[in-house]
Length: 295
Image (cartoon, rainbow, N blue to C red; front, side, top):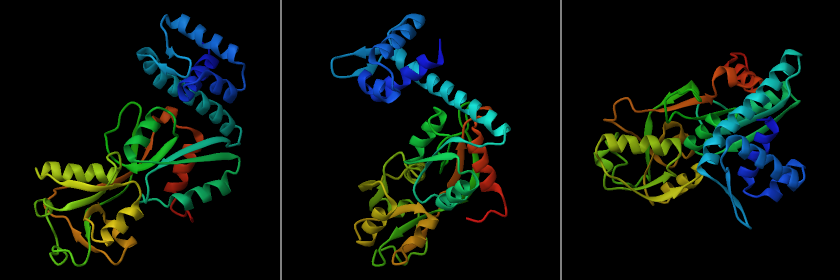
C-alpha cells in the first residue's frame, strides 16, 4: 500500500467524485481510477459504490477512511517535525474552535503565533465542540479549543484551560428576574433559546436537566451566540449559558443555576496523542501556556 493510494482514496471520499478529485490532486482521471483499483485489489474489497453522478463509500471504505486520514496526518507531522529540528517551523496549522470560547483569546493567540512563525499557513474552522472533537480524533485538525464533551481516548487528549458555572439569562421583566438563583425545576415550563445539539453549552445544559429529571422545550435553536442573545433580549425565551456570556449583553438579567452539583462549563484544548501532535500545534500550545505572552 502506497501513501499516494491513500491520498487518492481520501480525496475521492471527500469530493464524492473522481473528476473533481483528479482536478484537485492535479492527476489524470485514469491515473486516479487506476490508483483506487490498485488499493481495492490489495484490500480485496470495493471501497466505493460508483454511479454516473457520484461515488459513495462502502462499509469497508468508511472503515478505511478514518485510518487513512490518521496515517496521512502522521506523515505530515513527521515532515514538519524534521523541518522543526532543522530550525524551520512550516507547514499548516489546522485549528478548530467553538464560538466565544472561554480561557483563550483565539484571535490574539493566532496573531502572536503568525508573528513568530510566518511560514506556517493557518487554517481555522468554527463549529460545535462535538464536531471538532471528531475532526481532531480523525486527524483533520491539529488541535481545537472546545468544551469538554467526552473523556480522553487513544485518538484524543485534552488540556484544561478554564472552568465556570452555567447561568440563566432572561429578560429583566421575566417572572424569575428577581429570584436571585433558580433551579432546573423552576425552569421546567419555560421556552428555551439554545444552540444546536453538538455545541458544548447545549450538551451541558441537556445534561443538567436530564440529571434533574426535568423536561424542557427548546423552541428557538440557533448557531451563533449573538442571535441567542438577541432572542432572549426580545423576551422570546430564556437561555442557560456559560457565565461569561452574560458580559456580552448587560441589558439581560443573569441568574445563577443552583442544585446542579458539580456540572460546569469546562474549556479544553483538544489534541491528538503526543506522538501524533504536529510541531505547529505544540508551538501554539507553548505560546498559550507562556506566562509572559502578550496578545
